[in-house]
Length: 55
Image (cartoon, rainbow, N blue to C red):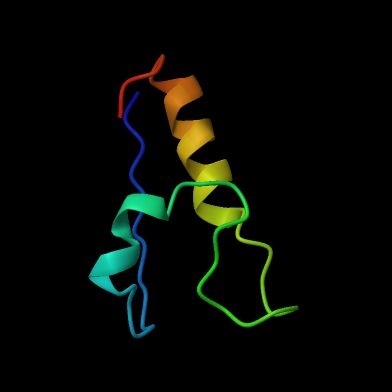
């Protein structure tokens, strides 16, 4: 069974100097109180658990 997801983003993007940190828990480029920084970390962990550690 195949599953497809289409994801769209209209944000301004993440500066290149932050690329190495974007999957760290609680990392955010938003101001204090504007985000938890868990979204990409949680997403990464879900994908790794489905793909048995491969991403």
